[in-house]
Image (tube, rainbow, N blue to C red):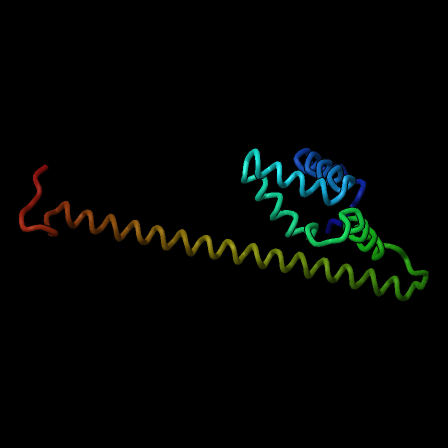
Length: 151
């Protein structure tokens, strides 16, 4: 199991995105709206992507981008602080370990479902191709028309 490490280095692609997001957050909601409007003006898919990101991330309707980010970080770290009660801390650690295992098992289950769906779709595609090839062979052999084809 891997746990969240806030000091771990980020991937380069995530780095520029995170820096841009932090910069816009530091400027406030107006900067997000200005970036979205400029995105629409210069290249509409960028503006649309920013709009969807702001709605999905609930930045559009929160009072402040900075407080939203701060609340998410403080909530994430509160589960890691020891309470001072060893019995409760042991219970919490066991529960977190169990939840991480359940999350891992669920993600593996979803992966198996995706693979099964992909296989079913691929098998259906291959069956359709085989039927189409068989019907072409029948037409090529003259069974589909009144006279045989000449090669």
